[in-house]
Figure 1: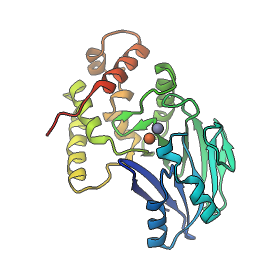
Figure 2: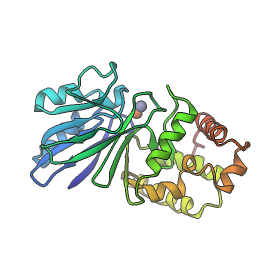
Figure 3: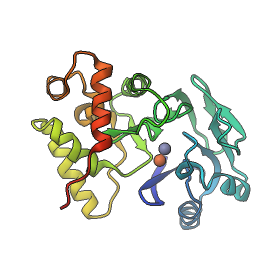
Length: 253
Ligand code: ZN
Ligand code: FE
């Protein structure tokens, strides 16, 4: 099993996963060129495309790649995704023959209402819902929906590798440190992220164990976050945290 994060557009990742027979799938191809380059360089063939949600930076290259390579597009039930061969929803099992991988589909509304994640082989493809040390903006769902979605993802095993849709980790760490300054795991993660970005390397995948230790959106019940965010109601705390992140600007270096 070979997993690659292909940088795309401004700060997206297209995930490429290949089996031992040389067949690959990609997740959320917002454009075609990084996928074509990776296929050409590796000699892999493209058999399947998985989409997490309808935003153009996640689906923009899907139809063209599918036509060119004869790949099958799996996508949530949402008319805003016009090109799909198989529609998926919560609790579905995606069993691919080519490449030989299988995934469980988890509905995770919040960033958008029809957003899904794909979980299998110790990997979680979670689009713009769970980021490393952050979470997606609430474009369509409510704070309660997003919190519930994140908690479903956070309940997966510790070693699960979190394959998210964007390289946002540096700014996410800066925001998180402001709320959780004495979290040693977060400080270590921030230093690691700084070093990897200085070398232009991806900071993902992380693991769910890392996220539970560092990600403020999974830590709203800890004393530090309870103190930083007023309110006894956990949905209110989560909503306030998300609002603060919406207004956060990375301090200039
Ligand atoms: Zn999105
Ligand atoms: Fe996105």
